[in-house]
Amino acid sequence: MTQSRPDPESTRNRILDAALNVFSRKGYYDTKLDEIVAESTTSKGSIYFHFPNKEQLFLALVDQFADLLERRVTEDIAEETGMVRVRIALETVIATFSKYRRPAKILLVQAVGLGAPFESKRNAVTDRFAQMIAGYLQEAVDAGDITPVDTEVVSYAWMGAIYNVIIRWVYTGEPEPPRIMAGLLPLLLRSVGYEEGVGER
Amino acid sequence: MTQSRPDPESTRNRILDAALNVFSRKGYYDTKLDEIVAESTTSKGSIYFHFPNKEQLFLALVDQFADLLERRVTEDIAEETGMVRVRIALETVIATFSKYRRPAKILLVQAVGLGAPFESKRNAVTDRFAQMIAGYLQEAVDAGDITPVDTEVVSYAWMGAIYNVIIRWVYTGEPEPPRIMAGLLPLLLRSVGYEEGVGER
Image (tube, rainbow over all chains, first blue to last red; front, side):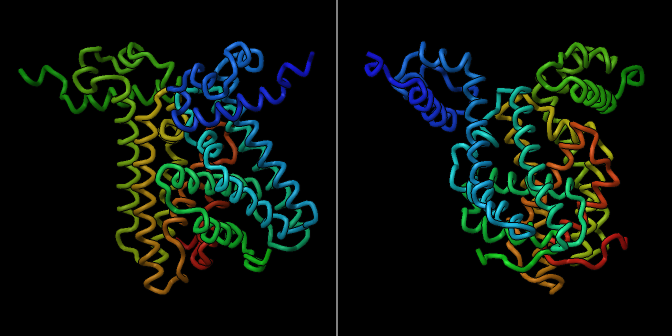
């Protein structure tokens, strides 16, 4: 009996996938829930069962991407310490943004029309990654890999640098991801006086 | 006779000043034109004479701030060349954002609810400054002050770094402007391998 109904988790994921497609194509404001219904081949009832409104659905996409980003960083740095860990964390953040253009667009440019709830969410995501990076940086300082820096300023500056280059790419298609990685990663590392190991991974 | 009427330019400026106050306090979406009328001690008719709608008034504030920023940079670098010019341009951009918290708030955080026309405007402002900085950087490379860098990636990364640290300050009051300057300027310069001259100005 239960087999005849789709698993709620898979329905939820199907809705999120469809929402990602539609939002990244049309932006938050111009997206109608009916289009997400059509694209997900679910029903309005199913969508409302999982997400009370369009705003919650959009914010769930942001959370989904932030969780993915954090999981990748955590996996990739598991065996590392000091500035090598910082380098790999940055590399993973840049690579993940570059690989997932649609979620990057959702997080960085397509929330126009959503307003304050989205701004709070985006700030929370930025804080989460900036604080993670600041923590790694401090350990790299403590380990003597680099001379002391203002880890709070550095981590917010780095997140902003990554965001802005990715925003430009999302809007214009330039610079392309390999050029972003080749230009941005050494730039960020050199900004705290760390030169070695670039590209060694 | 004409003396009895206020000069249109001064009325326009009074409206812009009032709009800056109200928008930076309440954000774009929640601002009513009536509040700007009251704050500017002008009339709705005067406002409509100068600005066809709320959107145009808001965008005029962004232009006003971008023009101020460009004028200051242009003045401050007039006598300089090479990386010293790049350093002074960055220093002026950071100092101007830090000094003008309300316009910074307008440009970077308070446009919520305005949408696509604002995004285009903000991108245009970013492009304008990124391209200016990229030009100076290329001349510093050509002069042999620094080794070649991807000036496009660097200039967008720098603008994003400045924006994000300023956004955090606008929202939280931290880090305070002297700490921003002390942390951010050397960071940006070091990112292209330039160490000398920091704070020499």
